[in-house]
Image (cartoon, rainbow, N blue to C red; front, side):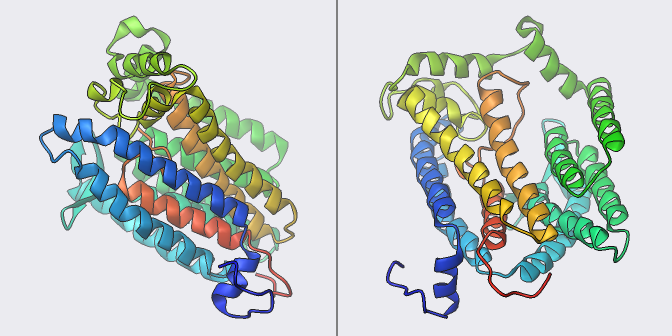
Length: 372
């Protein structure tokens, strides 16, 4: 691709000279690290549940190139096209959320997955990036004075959160709420309402703690480990201790033989045990770089839609990574959430690739375009 000249006016040529190649490189590096960690973590899990030892490896490595192609393909789109794709995706995602409540698989008391053509699909993963772009569009139209887009954004937020809580999925609700809150704040939410929103969030969390036994159990176990089963977290902390600064070496970890979700929610523990603290810091730095680099690109934007949509997508990406790593390190109550581009999970992988493709499309340098 370095062979493209600056005068190349083809779609790919214009993309190459306008996309943020630093962000692209960081994301591809995270994908590579994720592939290595899946190779290290998943064979033990597959063997334990009676599957071929490379079952998860083959499936993940098959879909990683697909995810990269989707990400690059989406990043070729214009902001107007991104807005249209997100709107259609949100409508489809809401339909799948409704269908999940009716015909979804119930696992551990939650109904979050649909079985389509033999593949489990988590519709909420696809709703996240589409909601971030759609709500940004509504807020941008509100700031232009065209119509009360804030009301449309609020109604859509209420619908999404209502469907998520019926599953129930508190973690996804928190991510959606943070996206919505950040965008509303950037769009000009009055300070008085900021305080009200924060208090509403605290009240909502307390309500979830009182109404949902699984939420109460996780919070109680976080505050007092003696109050319940903390097996996965304890083994994860042992893995980090065993790894030290440089790790035990690829394939030498033992935690993956005992942690049930080590290939998904607790894959960061494998990085800590087999590759050590230094590798964990590299992974953390890569995620932080993508988020900070994205916000730096947005500082030069004058279009409200691009700023709000980009900010929402960055909040989603950064918050999801933080929740995964922090829960593995026992800094917050455990929450089943994948580490973007690293954990096993096909719905998460494809949805994150769509979201990052949207971000790279929105943060491309554009010259002489009409207002959107």
